[in-house]
Image: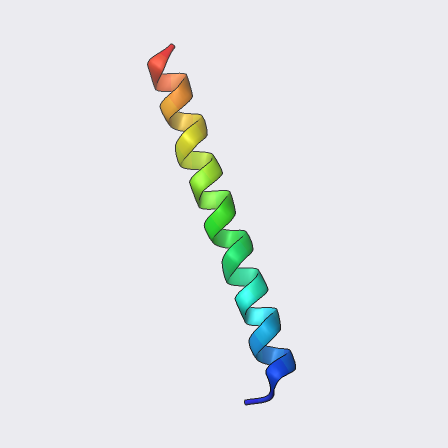
Length: 33
C-alpha cells in the first residue's frame, strides 16, 4: 500500500470521527435543554 492511499484513508477516518464526536456533543446539548 502506498502512502498516498494511506493518508487519504487516515484523513477520511479523522473526518468521520470528528463528525461523530460533534454529533454526540450536539445530541447531549439538546438533551440537556
